[in-house]
Image (cartoon, rainbow, N blue to C red; front, side, top):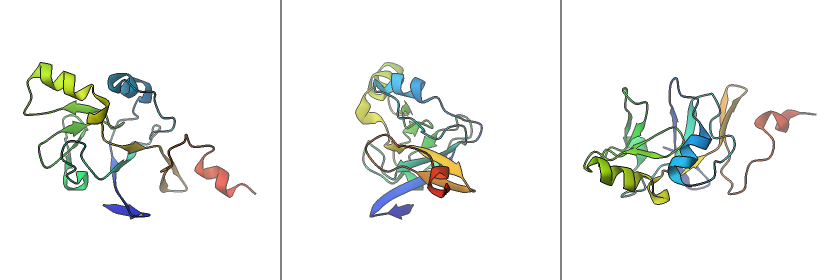
Length: 136
């Protein structure tokens, strides 16, 4: 994990996934956060599975789904943090549990600029982009 101001983060790449914040938010029943990864595939999540707070950095990327899978109970999260699969649950229970906002991993808006992955850790929507920092 990476630590920023005491917050443990997991930085991961979802190859081939640009992500659709609106679709993920619809699954979660929440409003999308702008700038969540864009088309870069890079994602930044809080390093804690919402199920039992196990470190997501100890998990893996499922090659079949491209989802980040928690090493503890196998919960899977898509590029926007939405829960996609709970291996121990039947289909109906999984759908119901994954649609709950509490089942989503905490994700942060990201962008790639100057060959660096940038993450907005604030609670408000990000204003501007990393390239704005270097405009003179």
